[in-house]
Image (cartoon, rainbow, N blue to C red):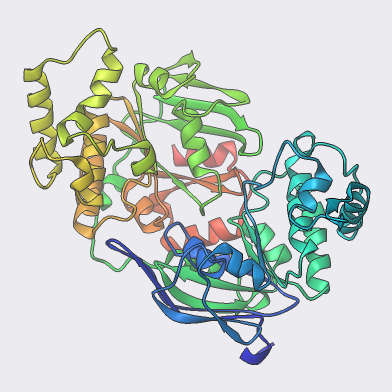
Length: 516
């Protein structure tokens, strides 16, 4: 499979820009009939943008797309579907209130004399499902079936028409192991029938189980295209995350600072778990300690952070704050216990774009005090001025709308919001993603400085160099479970990459004593 002429999809020099962002920069991608091809990369790598270019959601600024040798210009998803390209998303895009058969045949019902022949339509749906090894009552309501069955119904619907390319975007994120095996059996069957399958997942085990080839993107550019057998997991992880280029000042003193773990931890999570999101995990954070959460996207980093911050409810396990059992039913409850959480999605769950810098900073303080205890104007001014100066927010104008600030300065304002609440534990999920080097260094320095003064921090970053630079200890997650803990002074980047890629058993009690 080396000839471009035999490729079912050949994307060449694809570039797409949004205001202030180069999402894709001259990316090539090739997909052949009868293969499962995985698209890999961390958040912001350009995977979703490339898929949307292929499926007609986005137009391209430059480059070309050929499907079965013919150059195509996709102005809509309908254009892509007409070219034989179908997509099944993580969130199943079907009609829950209709029957299985109606969903499979939607838009392709069998008609006689201008009327839908429902008996023939359901029979055709049953045949289409049977080809995928699915035998269910086509007249049953779709919503009555599991997510796994709904995924298979969505695939069956795609295959009713003349589909030559099937895009599976995170199809296994909500499935258990048995359901994944059922889905993979269908994927292999379609591959053997000559369908080209573009597979996107953050689970390395699944990538290596189902893929024939893979393409790696990083920061909107092509890293390379590889046969799966020729790229080890360690090499794949290294290509996905890249290497630190050395622009940031070293902040090694924080990681080397000794931590007293003989007393009561600020936070202790025991067997904390959430169905289809996180396997049972133990985690402790001591006063003045920065604990990094390391792992690829989808490993469970954010899911763990959201559980200990009260943003999501755990199905099992318990959390102790300062030695006392706590039920953190919401971020507000967590804030009342001294836990502040800064989400990775600063636009959707962080900043309020129509408010000023000052108003955004003071939101956390007002939330902690409650609606009946208003923060006075003089206190607001003092708090805002303190943190604008301390974090170097630019422009240093408290009345500027936050939506007009750069990403780095928006992130500084969010950090100011939570620091103003005087938390005992600060949870930072990707606090430096998508910001410039100077702002990144400012935030790292401030976090290290506050930890030296006693603040405890849980720090998540896709940049492993950043985690190693700032944390004293790293909890490593893979495929929704914790696989171990490492003292950062005892591990370098290569060793951490290997640990994430290969996986090792949970640390033993004696190993934990060594860490302590």
